[in-house]
Image (cartoon, rainbow, N blue to C red; front, side, top):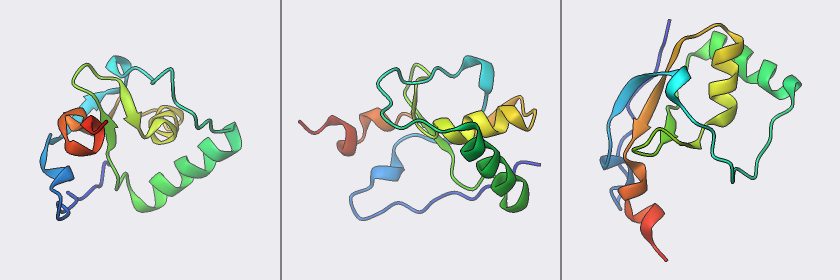
Length: 100
């Protein structure tokens, strides 16, 4: 079961760009510049949370399927045997990612 809810846009409209989709994990690419790493213990904890509460926060991906945020959630979904995950695409075009 994939349970998630659409987030509401904030005042700046950051969440208005892109849409929530279900994307196959195999097409997602981790961001090589991702500063955060997750231990296997953390991945297991995220997986337990997903099992209990659902995948409530979609992974953020670029238009070319690079993971911007949600690396741990995607890894946890893999651990659970999921083939696809909720994603929000097109976020690189939002002001939050294009400001100098």
